[in-house]
Length: 251
Image (cartoon, rainbow, N blue to C red; front, side):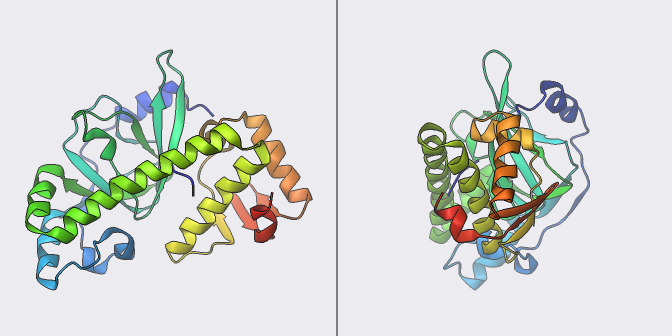
């Protein structure tokens, strides 16, 4: 599995100027379709109200809006409730690179724990919503509830594994293998969320994919076209249909 076009710098800047007070709604873990991905296994029934009291709000994030920016103070973790976001890291020379794709049920903001500031930006790829988790309150609950502490540790470990896998993709795979691995990763993650693993809307642009996979936009487009001619996929804009799953796995 994988982790998290060079994104236009002004896009993130403009998105960051949108008001921080986006619409909020009450978040209920017990009624969330993604609870099997977010909630810790082994959580006692009497601990569920504590968790729901902790995660009391969900925030809307409009397409193109930054949930947070690199350098912002860290005090909150998030979980994607609906939609999808990309994480973006800036190089010293100002270039930006997509470092991750976050789908419903995925955590966001863990990068800020070590320095108390976010190290990258998170930008919505479509109209999305996130659950708001105050980190200080989460730490307190982790001290009281072992299952919650285990869940936080697993989330951190998952992120390390995903980032290590991405390093291998960028360092050792061919262009065909990189694009195939990415499509298979999205397919598997959609399946875990109860969606179709064979047909999905890929919210990342071809430029985003190129930035994420260390390839040019042209190479991504040519590779997808080649996959389509070989009967591996059918790509119609953002809609991707995987025709030959085993063929993609054996590239």
